[in-house]
Length: 438
Ligand SMILES: Cc1ncc(COP(=O)(O)O)c(C=O)c1O
Image 1: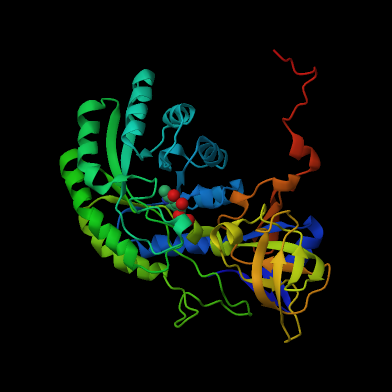
Image 2: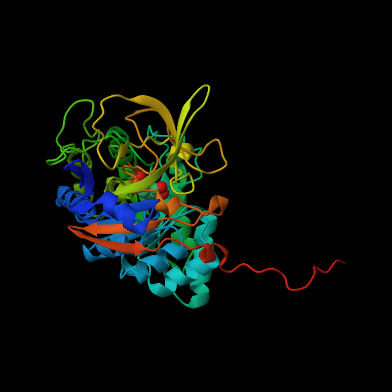
């Protein structure tokens, strides 16, 4: 579900009027719906209740403290990929004892930090990394809990840039080497404790088949590692895809139950019904690492129309949000539904590119989109921008980053202040003296 709909012609997040929020806080502005995130967490949790499981939200999807706090409060754990993400989780009230630490390039500082905070498990992605963690844990007089990320060489049938489980991807250790690597840990790494096995085949999967294929392929390995080393968990990663096109008319948005072309291609129930029967007999704790599913449809990016321009070949609507605010369209060819915050009464449409102010040809939010007429000053809502939106934002072109709002019913909380010009140069220094030349 999502909680964005028109009420008397004005787009709302739950009961909050998005036009009023944009006027008050300025644009570009990210707005999230707390109810949507809670609903997604509860649905996934409920769908898997037949297996012992822990939802470890993938922090990279959206790492705002308020969102992490909301998930921690619901009992969720976290999948982190940096010391910075661990810091955020701790600041948000989460616990390292419910965190898994993924990523191919963990540094010494990050490993030490996670060990000292009592991380639940390092999901290691190479033999070299395992030996390094072993070395650091030995120096600290600690034992490091580890799992190995297996690369099952399964095609996730998603965009090439978010496929992670093929053998040509940098992630995980080849399926055929897993037994050998666990034996190295057991025999040569006295400061490691084998705790689990992990996989993640990609993001925005829209069918259940690749999950089933990967789970079926990896289960024999899981059984072997359970028998030999007593592993306690199997993490099946994240990747549940979301619908990027949805209905906004009043009433309950119903893509959970819809059928046909506009239906959610992968409902959480279909996912759970397919994987839970395979996982239940393992008698292990199952970890899930959803990111996009939890927050994607829970967020929108509000932007203001600055200018319109008709070129010889195309028309452009120039808005104040750019690829530095939302990079998905240009990086992943991500398609976002873009609608006026005040519903148009016109039925006539024209074709245009909706572009940002950044000096890059790739700075667009939509291309060749049929839109109803807009005027300068209108607010537009870029929907389903809650995942990999703000968390991938940058200061490119020296643009201060957007503010973020978390809506809870009628209440709208400012959960990140808009950056100021001073924020842009914080920490920079002009050398007081001329550079010395040798
Ligand atoms: C290891 C790992 N787990 C989970 C996720 C979350 O994926 P998604 O947002 O598609 O659920 C990612 C995303 O890249 C990942 O790399």
